[in-house]
Length: 167
Image (cartoon, rainbow, N blue to C red):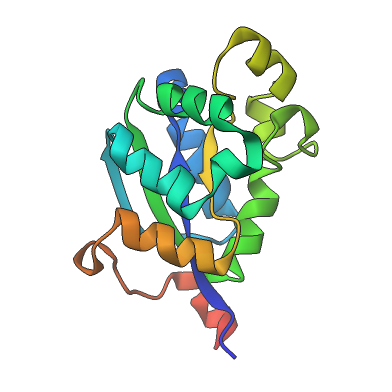
């Protein structure tokens, strides 16, 4: 079984608005993940509904109010969508990013280092949680999200230099 996987990462509007995209991308690259696709876009509400509800089931997981605040936040600035590839990439990326609620994220994760806000605070302020990054939860979700955001022509196959360690 080949453990090389692809996963979707989206740098959210709060990352773009704070101009920390390079810092965040470098965290993934330093962890041996390599980019096989990347683009900047401004998704509309229908696109985001498909991503967050049809694929991610956000309304059933968190409730509609949180979903609506997330959609509002996700349309403030553009996003950068990327596909990373490497050994067990889905789990690897999730560990680097940290749990969805930044306040609960482990020290050293992206969300702990750059976000640190609670669901309760965001809910009280009636804002989406600014947690900087979307990362696929599972291999199946990554597959669906990648299909939703990228065509096959936009994805590149190449061996990074560190692939000599996996031969």
